[in-house]
Image 1 (cartoon, rainbow, N blue to C red):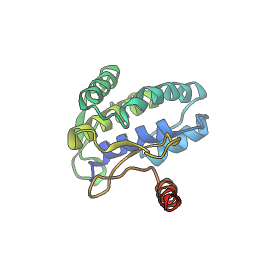
Image 2: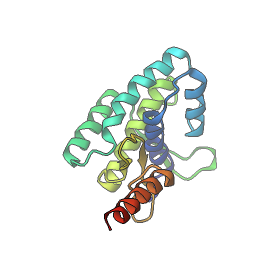
Image 3: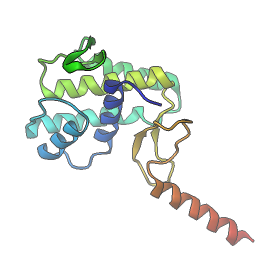
Length: 173
């Protein structure tokens, strides 16, 4: 499943923030660049604000109750100050922006992640905002697979679970 560039990037940035372990300014700036935000220079204080925001994003992933997930995303949207608008800048196709271009990087990251999660919720009913099924793994992801049946954050986690299940079946015999 493909969301538009900003919805997909926003949801993916939300997952990256939740999964982040390093909230130093250089690490956060690199993450923001990777997810195509502009003017990403960030201070240590702003990086700390995004670390707090990441904790607010976390419960949205893997939530099976759609009503709870909608409530959580609406609470995120209530905090953001953006007024979404459509743009076709730099020769690109029309696309949705979730933030004011004049806002600071923290506001733009919050607006982008809340908007991206809202789009993911709207397009997939929230079923593609997942949390790894391997016991002990807390990694979250946005499922962009064709069939929408992703259960693990990576092939490594899927393989660990499958190998353990295989060994358990053979021990019973």
